[in-house]
Length: 283
Length: 321
Image (tube, rainbow over all chains, first blue to last red; front, top):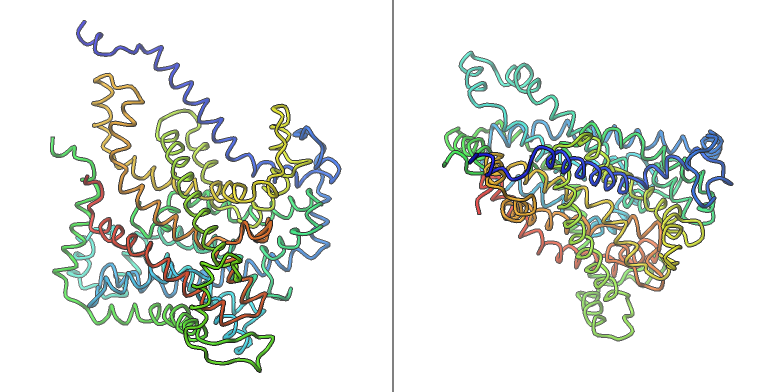
């Protein structure tokens, strides 16, 4: 009797509460996600269907718009984006893995200052360096080149990668490392055979994040690249600012192509997103 | 029960790491491993900033290279004195005001929305993972693409979905013309609320489940549980979210670029966009550089608080009150 009194809500009530919670959560989730759905759907419409009101969710899908953006030269932009994000991420990892390993497990003097130095470069607003960067790039013939973009994307993602990787390295139990060292494992064996397999998922998540940020980056690209030769996808989207924006279906098809690759990476690495952006402070 | 103290799951890890650092000998190997990344970051970020400082002391317009001259702090003097000039000749005051409005508006609303989202998905219900994934997605969507989607598909006065929904209520706003700042903030919130949700969710999940369970057994309503247990625990996570949001959102230009181009008039020109207009489009290198330096100085204030919090969190004082 006592127990029954202390549980005022019956099982039925709980079920109802869960049902209500489920409905509210799904409605909120779908509403918030709706713009993405709308963009993707509109990309498969004809221009005429794209602007009908009420909006049509059932329609004859067409790939015309994808044909259209291909004819307008979308794919060179796409290729440039792939090169810029993959190459910059590869360099980020080459620089960040040793640095993060050292900062986590082989600290040097003032290791904390070094760590905070990296983070402070991330918080330096791009607007604070864009002016001289533009001049320097002009003098070094780096304007309008993918190399130029890669150089700055590496700098942009390096601090996040170092902090994030460091937080993964730190989670490796010290006992395992000590055991390996007692067994006489050298640094190379320690890293390759023990550490890397353990932090593998962390490495992947870090690389994904770096790809996502490089892929979506616009401010440096628009300031440092003015020719199509090195233009990335965000610069293709820029064409839709003006009158081209009237072609909603085409705009949506291009947007879908622009967001699909990294949204998928984002879904895979969603749990690590916050770790990266909070510099490993939140796991 | 001491073991049920929230945060103890985090602390041991961090403490052992901290202790390990103290007992381990500092290695010269470490220095060599960090050096490449360190040198790279210095060259690519610090050197240009020093050049920014240097450039900011010149009258230097790329269109008039013949007039280039060292003028000391005059760019700064001009910018600062323009703050009290009613005509705001450099659109600098407007840019500062807009930056503050966008950042504060977007951070506060994103935090509130993120809190609601986090609470929603912190309960078990069918499809929880899918809902969480949907809520996170806007954060990884390319900002320039989503801005165009908002501008056209959502906010267009004639064919946009929002006005179609509002129509029956007698509302027909021309979003980007009548409410440009609010429109930008909507786009920023859409992007940043998921980020706040992730931070706050991590905070909620570091609350000991036993504490919640005990409250539930005592008959606490979900409402009481939220305000009595969840919210008080989140303080540090809210701080972290607010500060990170501030340093990231101050830098935002993508939505402005794609939708309003700083207008109508100067109503959505923020500081980074103003630097772009001044230096890159207006070729006024000296003045643009001075603006850039001022932005950095303003950011450093927020950053100082941020670094302090990160430092504390790193030391594993995760959930103390």
